[in-house]
Length: 228
Ligand code: ITT
Image 1 (tube, rainbow, N blue to C red):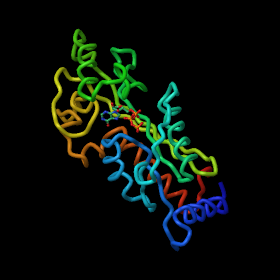
Image 2 (tube, rainbow, N blue to C red):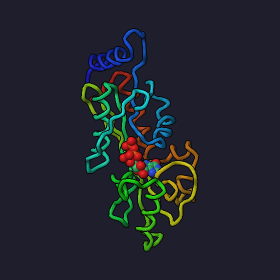
Image 3 (cartoon, protein in one colour):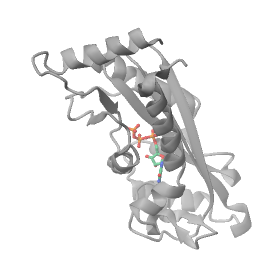
Image 4 (cartoon, protein in one colour):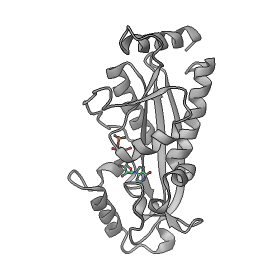
């Protein structure tokens, strides 16, 4: 997209922001229903020169269906779905835990592991049950994250990040969300649920992907354009 295209987006968001309000900054919709992710993104995207908004703030109640087979496909599906409905530049992440001893499961199904009705704690219990006979050295895995940014004109950018760890036998730690209480980082001797928000963001899959997203957005907003 060229500068003209980017200006159209800026102008359109100003108009969709109320029309009569001058100089309303361009907004970036962070499209997630997961409060844990939202908290992390709030901090991670602090340097982006855009006003961050949420699905609740823009009153979007529709749900994107995650029909993709990969994190990248699902991240694009989500970002495109909410961009089309709101007209806003939209960022979505698809992420999850890949466990080697389970052939990469739960992977893209991390949020739906075990089926509907499970809580985060229930999914962690299920994971530990499925790994009960697996020795420490074989409990390796990684969190992966793909962030997609979709622009109203149709351009799509993606960036990714990963962090390696071990699924420990017992949950430990009260921070974070999802599988954090069992995701052990050998070099720190802690699970990601024992890290502060700042420390998790520093090394996590989402933190790594978000740093790339921030650099990309800064370049685009400085005049490079989403396609450049
Ligand atoms: P949105 O699609 O609305 O963003 P979601 O939770 O459904 O929320 P995903 O489909 O990307 O998001 O699934 C991600 C799941 O992977 C998440 O629910 C956790 O179970 C797990 N997960 C991802 N990142 C994690 C992290 O940083 N810590 C712990 N678990 C994580």
